[in-house]
Every structure is written in structure tokens, then in C-alpha cells.
Image 1: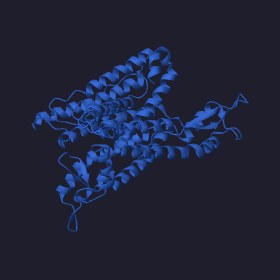
Image 2 (image 1 turned 90 degrees about the vertical axis):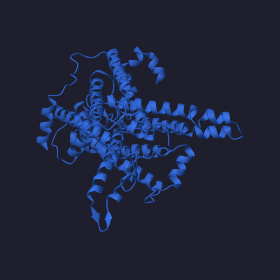
Image 3 (image 1 turned 135 degrees about the vertical axis):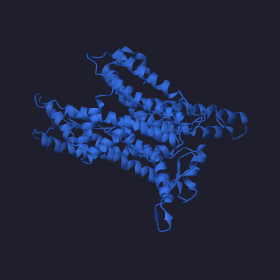
Image 4 (image 1 turned 135 degrees about the horizontal axis):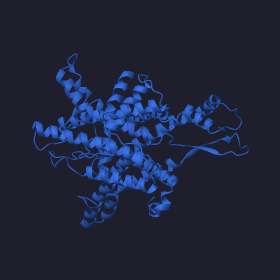
Length: 473
């Protein structure tokens, strides 16, 4: 596997790259580069790929998790980037990749391999979306199919380089900003539909009747759930644990080491949600392949139990269906009636069983990816102990030494990684069940992204240069 990483790293040398700035980038330039990248994202988001039918529609969950819009140039969005990172992190966690990410050269090799893998997956996912019928085409000509695949893949590749531009010249993470932008559009679009759309607030009130106002309030429940989820996420983001530390050279000074409750931020749920999305994406062709192969156990074709896809190439029954996200269905009452009282058509799996399985799977995946992310991003106890030791910090009442410091920090950081990862998974899963606009996962991600962006703005004193932004936040 080490040789495979070396090959990918060498291939990255033939690809274009965004060079690091030769001189420090000013705050105004950072803001301008960030806004320019976001504007280009919105342009690509709203351009339908040539050859795609106008009937193409996107789903909230797909749009939220991958910052994408079905049928547009960003049909696969950041999916290939996230999936490439998932693969490499799993390989490293399993010991198949021997890379020390604290070493700059090996970290560079890791990112080069991720770039090549992401570009490869961009073409693969684009081909799956088009060939599986998820993206309806104006015709089935070979040239049309190839052209749409090329456009969709190039859209994802451009997004990858825009992420690099923001990382090196802008503020924050491009991937995170793109997700937040997609969620914001979903919430605004959903609210407009609730008010002005068919059976919306305006239509309900105009119809009159003694129950018009209560009916209008019920219609707005998805937006109410959105605000509740926002409030819970903001509260959780502000919760933290403080560990007292001391400077060796300044006795009597006891600062606090703040560890946020969401210690690993929203990264685990991004990876977990992207994995769940790809389960649904790859499940349909896999089920069709297994079904065609006729793999039998006794007199039963196992594909019939593995998954059942409908004409829209989405799973609607079977084992793999249990791990797919919960989509809001119609009005609030219809959505909860579906969760509590309906079952799948073939195997009669209760939707509440589907909901519990999905939330549990999301939690487990979040814990796994949270552990990997803490290690690869230098947030584990060993890395933090090394950083504190280099700064001359120690914990009062304990002798100075990296091993002892690591042992003490492990009592806090180890459980915190587990609990915070499980918490973001649980919160995202439960919020999804409410039918909130933009999905619960999207709201959780957006709050975390905006919170981190606010901290970045404060560090760069952006609010002093652009005071109007302070009012927005």
C-alpha cells in the first residue's frame, strides 16, 4: 500500500496545483478570494449541465452533504473529495498506510494521494450518477452520456481546486463553506415554499375557516424545528471543558486549556453522512449486479433481501435501505405519520425501525471517523501533549514530561473524542427525523461551520475592517 501512495503522489506532479502565496495575504485579500470562490460555487450550482433534462431534481440530503445539486455542474459536489479522504483515513487507521502526518513531507504525500484519488472518484461517481439514471438525460446517445459525465466530473474537480484556493488564500475551509452555502439555500428555498407554495401559509390563510390559523402554524412547523435545532446546536457549540495549565517560566500564572464539547467539530458527521450517501449511491448498481448474477441461497435470490430500488434508482426496501437517510415526506403530520405508522412495501419493515437503525449507524460511523480525524489532524492526546510541551506548559500538580502529560490529557481527550463524536451523530440523526428545513445534519454542519468561521474572523480582526459583518454574525 505504501507503494500505491508513492504512485499516487508521483501522478499528482502532473496535475495543476494552487501554489501557496509567496507573501502573507492581507485580510482584505482573504475576504475577496473567499467571496470570489463562493460566487463561482453559486454560478456552477445553478448551471444545468448540457444534455441534462430539465426534470432533474435534487434531494435535500444529497444537496446538504455534498454541496451539490442534481443535474447541475455540481451534481456530485464535494462527494469525491470527502470519499477520497475517507478511504485514505480508513487505510491509515487499519495500518495499510504507514505515514507520519506530523512529518511535513509525508503529510504532503498524503494530500497529493488524496488529490489524485478525488479526481478519479469524480469521474467514477459522475459515471454512476448518469448511467444509473439518477441524472435524466435529454437522450441516451453515447455522445450525450459522455459529455454529461465529463461536465459533472469537471465540476467536482473545479470545486476541489476552489477548496485549495480558499484554504491557501481565503478564510476557513472551502468544503465547509460550500456545505453551509448549500444548506442556506435549502432553508431559504424551503421557507419560501412553506409560505408561498402549494398548500403553504398564504393559501391556507386565504382559504379561511376557523382552523385557518392553527393550520398555518402547523404548516410552519418544519421552520420551527429548524430554529430549535439551530438553538440546540449553538448551545452545544458553546459548551466546553477547561483544563488548568501553568507556564514553567511564569509561576503563579494558571491559564485554562479550553476543550470544546464538540471537540472534533462537525467533521465526523460530514464523513459519516458522505459514507451513508455513497452506500445509497453504490448500492443500486451493486444490487442490480448481484440480482443479475443470480446468487442463490437455497431457493432465494439474496439480492431481493439486499436492497430494492424503484424507478427513481433510490433504495426503498431491503437491508441496505435501513442505512439510508430519513427524508421529509410532505407536510409535518404526513412526515410523522410515515415515521410512526408506515412500513416498506415488500418486506414490511416499519419506518421507525429504519429511523432507529439509521441514527445508530450514523452514531457509530461518527465515532469511528472522529477517532481517525483526531489522530490525523493532531488533536489526539499525544499530539496535544507535544504541542503543550513545546510551549513550556504543564498541568499543575504533575511533573513535567511529555509521557506524563499525555497520560493526564488522555483522561480528558480520549473520552471527549468518543462522546463528542457520538453526540454530533446523535444530534444530526435526531434532527433529521424532525423534518427540519435543510435537514438536521445540514443545520448541525452549518452551525459548526459558521461558529468556526466567526472565530477565524475574530483572529484576523475582520470585524474591525468590515463592521457590518459583525452585525450579521
